[in-house]
Amino acid sequence: MDTTVQVLVPSGILDSTQAEEVRAQVDSALSTGAKTLLMDLKDITFIDSSGLGVLVSVLKKVRSQGCEMVVCAINPQVKMLFELTSMDRVFEIFENREAFEASR
Image 1: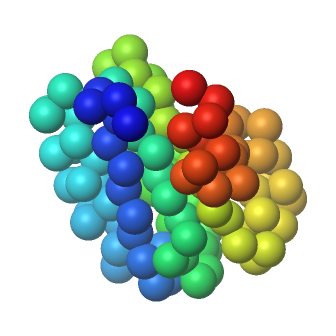
Image 2 (image 1 turned 180 degrees about the vertical axis):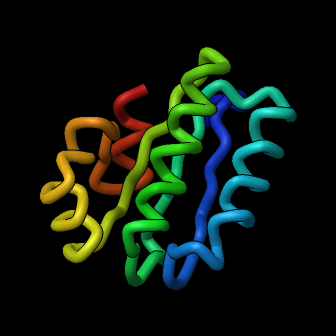
């Protein structure tokens, strides 16, 4: 995999309590020269509205620095949330990490 691609794998429930950790991981990845962030959500069991807000805010930050962020491995609950909020049109979503790598 390209060294400018950084994979982030949050786990558990993505809500306001995990927001700062996700932001810190994104900041760290960007500071090390990552041009693409792959947010692998395979270990996320649930996302609430504040968790979705965190993903949107880090997406804006990543894009403002001329980089890209994609997500993969979303579970049915997360997929439904993305579809209901039209975030499936905002985020580029891959079935899994292998699908992302195959697209490069």
